[in-house]
Amino acid sequence: MATGFLAICVGLLFGAREERPHLELTCGYAETISALVDEFDSADSVNTLDTHASHALDSGGVTMRGIFQHPLAEGKARLSYDVAIPTLGDDDRAVMLFSAGLRDGVDFSDAERAPDGVLCGVEVDGFRLLEFTVGDTQWRPFAVDLTRFSGATIRLTLATDADGTSNYDWLAWGDPTVYHLRTATGKARPTRVTGGVAVTLDALERTDIRPFRLEDARPVEETGEDLAASSATPLTGIGIYAFAPQVRIQSVASASHLLFAGKDYEVRCTVENVGSAPVEDFHHVKLAVSGAALRRGRADRNVGVLAPGETTTVSWLMRGAARRET
Image (tube, rainbow, N blue to C red; front, side, top):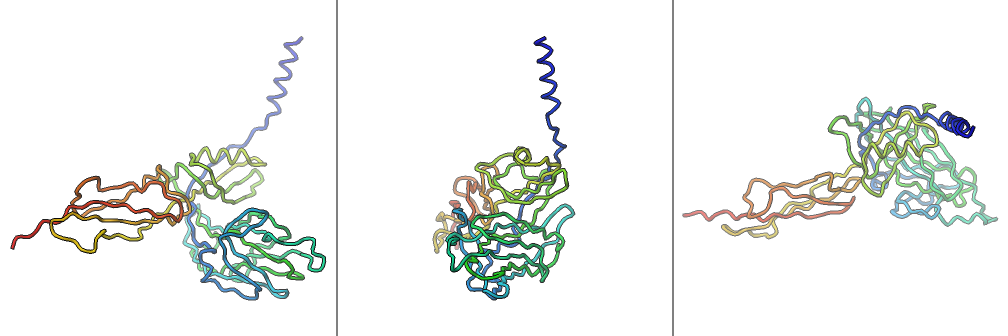
């Protein structure tokens, strides 16, 4: 009797288990097309009490870099950029990702100047693609699909409207950035990721796009499985587009202004990571020197770990040219 009861319980448990659909994984890279905070000085701003870029905007006690925009009581405050969208591949996307919230400091108990929220919009060439209202101090994530503008230069506008009074309409745009989500295949696919953009498709064919960050580098497949497992609804597809480091040479020069025949000299190369992700050991980023004889060491040198915005200098000791007999 006890054995039969146990068999029935186990059967019910297995029968109740939800079967998740097959998950299709796409991989690639999230390449920055336009970081609006960095390009703020090139934008046109109108009808505003105050609009400025900042590397420290707080909403709900969380700090992000972003753009502060306070509209006038009448009319729309507009901040417009010219953004060139590259020609996209068949499986690529262009998206703008950002967060939005009221900047901390709003006095919601102020009876004389009661906050009434701010109406926000994202426009391309004068057409509104997204509209939402912000009435609290808390970051909320948003995504705007710009794929249809492949190969075009667009006029991208961040707009706010007091929609009543301008009391405490302290709108903060959190790190608005336009990305090219470039799909990669074969050996060009990223193998490990420290952060990037995840594009998910659920069983109801709803798409969600948002950035993510990891504490440590992890395999792409494992990252996709973990993000899918944490989804509230079963997913049928997920794209992991890794933020990639981008190493740019800032300078190459000898350590001394004067070089002498027969005397060794040092060559220094300074590079900066201008990408959105750190250079990690697994990237195997190296610099190499050629065209002259080394005194010692290897011609290629590892850059090592390099965070976004950081610089490092690599040097080589070169053999001085022999004196010429006259």
